[in-house]
Structure formats: structure tokens, C-alpha cells
Length: 99
Image (cartoon, rainbow, N blue to C red; front, side, top):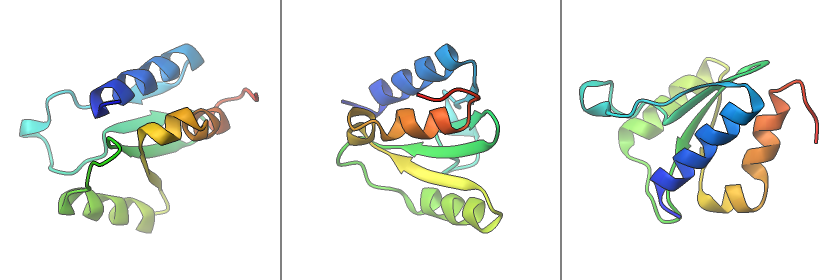
């Protein structure tokens, strides 16, 4: 699964669950390293999406540290997280729904 495919699945999941989801589609004129997905429900989560072998760039690591220092919920999601239910579980945690 590519990063773009994972991004599409995450966006579709958020839409189905009624969560606000932001993704910068063309980041060339944006701050480098900002997380791929910002999802808003009962709280805000910041997620960087990567393919199985994708490597975080220094700017992405920096934003992750800044977000965590401020008390934000930051993590990296990969295709394995989709397959094993991690993404579903974390997204459901910020909705008013339970499994």
C-alpha cells in the first residue's frame, strides 16, 4: 500500500465517522514537515503517514517533537497500522462511538 492509498483510506474513514480531517494536498508552499493528517473529534490527533519503508524527514521529526512537547497526540501511521486495526481504534477513540 502506498502512502497516497493510506491517506485516501484515512480520509474516507474520517468522512464516514463524521470527523473533521485536514490534509494539505500540495505542500510545496507550506511549512515543511507538517503532519499529513490532522483529525478533529473529541480531541485533535496529528498523524504522519508513511509507506512501509518510508523514512521520516528531519522536518517531520521536528514537528512531531514540537506537537508532543505542547501536549499534542502525534504518531506515525503505516499500512500495517491499517491492517491490524490500530488506525481504526485510534480514530474511534476520538469519536463518540465505540466498536
